[in-house]
Length: 123
Image (cartoon, rainbow, N blue to C red; front, side, top):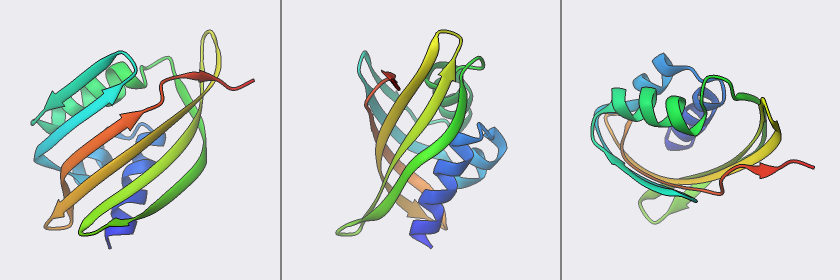
């Protein structure tokens, strides 16, 4: 179930499906992330999904056109999912890779840490 949950999170993020992301993530999610230029921290799923993930990381003009890689596993009791997207934005094509560690409660992600490569040219 944990691997399915991680894959469901990745697929929902790739499809920019806020409703499914909010089903996968607990409303009181303990969230921290690091991107090349910022650190992110929040505990309210609407803010995390709408403002951070789909507002700033993958903004409305960015299209995630492909999930190039998806790998999951566990480190002890903690789950892990690594994924790479092809992203097309108004100024070009990019690769974005993220590594997420997460824990679950009641079949939803309750604790999530993500590190991101940033947008790297796909050429």
